[in-house]
Length: 200
Image (tube, rainbow, N blue to C red; front, side, top):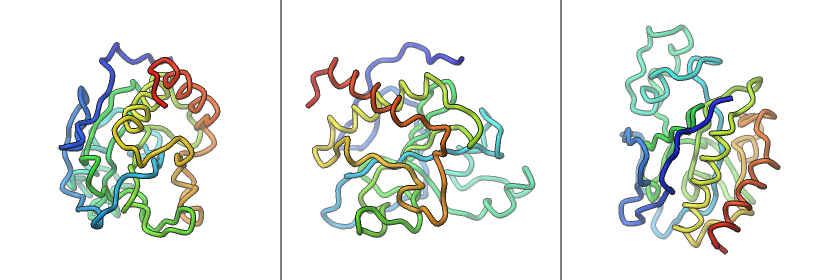
């Protein structure tokens, strides 16, 4: 099982929307949230590129608009797509940030949450490197819980009862983060970290 190297606690600079101590690969694929909109929902995604392969440069290339159409047969249709997420958590727990948290990343697509459409307007999208048949790693759960805690501390508009999967907001189109994502494990770990930190 992969384990993440020791890292300093994650924090959010709410002025810039940037996370401390993570790799920054800033994407051009974002825009401003609607006036008055703040992050309210955390949407957890799953991704591998090409499908079933981990650790390559292709997720960075996808989210920065530089994916080569001839790099793999699967890339042919994706190469012209304009997509992004706020962050990715790799298999080893490395976090990569693509879009400042205060901005609108293009991750949820056609989506709805509790009767509100256009989830990109009011959500933060985090991708986990994985598949529908590969369990996520301990390092990923640890880092996702730490990242979630940092988001809860930074944005009063967010809460633990507004954390969902991509499939929850786009059930007709998406199934990630799939059954391989252990929601009870993640929520228990998040609670342990919240109790240890004293975050309400």
